[in-house]
Length: 480
Image (cartoon, rainbow, N blue to C red; front, side, top):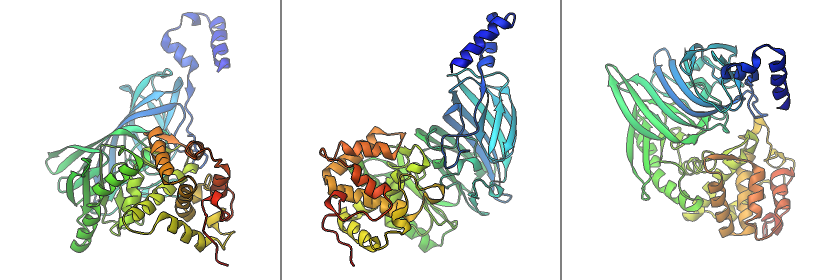
């Protein structure tokens, strides 16, 4: 940064009157254009340079017939450097932008990027508000080969990973830039709206109603969601006192609707059990939503996971475990996705064992035997510390990912693993972390053991881990 300081000094000597310039003029001289690129090598356009989001106040109106969305989002941000311009990620057309109440110039240099030029440069460290008005058809938008808008004429659910936000609000769309959220959705009054956090109010105005949800805990942008449609809703508290809000689409036939709600009713008890394993539940509420739309995956939207009509017990455990591992403790880069999916998959195994099912040791052994005679299979060759953008949701990230923790349990002991996972969740609460950080923390819970070879064998070596005690595989054999 020294060259900028030298430049300002030289200019002050060469340009008459510059030494007496106003503070606003001095900021303009130092200001730079914020980068349209974020921190992640997998998707470089995710997120943006120069700004940090603190809060999103989102108000969208959705029309089910045309499937058009109108939005106005006010993002409260902090400038990480003096800025003459900055970027946000948004796929919809923009009609107006204001920065701190003043009209700003803007453009869409690419369909994914919104470039904003404020009337005056923004000083480093300053908190400012950018107010964006936009409208368009999210179902027509695509990014990174993805068409993520999920809707029909009766229901809409904004759920997907790793990208969802740009389809309905402008943001710094990367997990490292978490923020608080206020979400207001206006739809026909006959529809219900579900989102993250706590339901604040619902205001009816003629034929329409606006529902307001608030998420006070920092949240990654892809985890923010809203759903609107006909929903049967149940609310209450778990045995431990955690509020839940469960919703099931009324598009489902009565029998399917009843079965789905029965699964969601497990949410409170599962959340309580997970808190006993991993530490205090990190958020203010829990629950879930089952959509009537044809969706082939579930997603751990913060506080309120979403599921398809095929919802089953272990997927509820998986998505609720993500509230600790994925939502509260989020990846620093998408290459660290094992910290999300492997941990949530292990939680499924641990829950099953604790409730009379197969032990984690037996599950580890059976999975190892199923794959140990295929050393060149993707199951083993995929590097769990850097799987590649096209492979972050591949089977090894989940199944082999769960095996790593099950083997670590055998290596360091049940109590040490439990304490490690609780310490991990506490140390990175509301933050971001890397695989390397987990390996370092694990070393302190290993009773002085060197776990470097263990993690190399399971995460990086690209072949079948030897069936040894050092690898947590004592007593496991590979059938010939």
